[in-house]
Amino acid sequence: MSENYDVIIIGAGPAGLTVALYTSRAGLNTLILEKEMFGGALMNRDLIDNYPGHSEILGPDLASQMLEQATSCGAEMEMGIVEQIIVEDDRKIVKTDQEEYMGNAIIIAGGTHAKQLGIPGEEEFAGKGVIHCATCDGPLYREQVVAVVGGSNDAIYEALSLAKYTSKVVVIHRGDKLRAEKVLCDRAHAQANIEFIWDTTVTEVLGESTVSGIQLNNVETGEASTLNVDGVCMAVGNKPNTDILAGIIKLGTGGAIPVNVSMETEIPGIFAAGNIREGSPMRVASAIGDGATAAMAAENYINARLG
Image 1 (cartoon, rainbow, N blue to C red):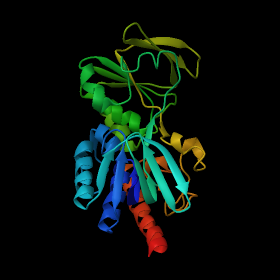
Image 2: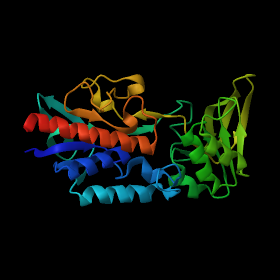
Image 3: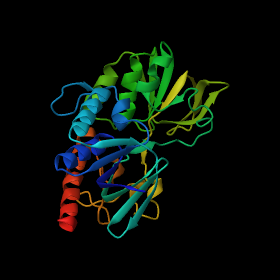
Image 4: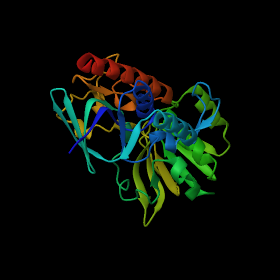
């Protein structure tokens, strides 16, 4: 038999936890479903220095504070992989690998996952030198050389985190300048053990049992070269976790969920917040804003139908 909730939140990152805080404070029976870690991507972020009110705070610490706030207001937390969402008029059923839940409103805040380059050796050496989380795996590469592929904020955060452990970090970017925020660029350029290779793509990951190098291609000259590294961190973008929504909600650019200014999807009673929604700035602060907006919109939706 399905358990009944006013609000079911899929994803316990900053957007989902903010929704839970607001809906619980509004007296709505709230459930958060999370498949991996409560706190989401915050758990893999070493230092956050652009969150208002904190000049510096560790990602896991911020996640812990947000989780404590939400649960202290009455939000319930459950682990589970969402396998299906069923919409029957005003009834919405969420099926996980563990249980089945029924809610009046659903907020999808499942975030994103790292994209792959799709090059030879990338899958073969996953966990054997190919990494996506410097905070998680950085200590394994003490005094070694690691490449970071990408030029975004995420790529430079990864490079700065790896620089604490490694002898050298080589940032490889297909352009001639970084796309990251200026403060991050300045910090990376000032770091003695971070180097840059411009106008270059990675075409293959090399090695035997573990990564030993990467094959490079200069996009300006076409020149191929090999760089010896002990690991390579792929930071080439993210893809929304929306595979289960195919056929339920019309997805937008890159698989993101289109929403209006109230975070409402095309289906009444289903909302999306955070990095998973179309047009997200992909920042913690914006995810929190999305969560608050979605929570209030969900409260209005429920009140209008149930009184």
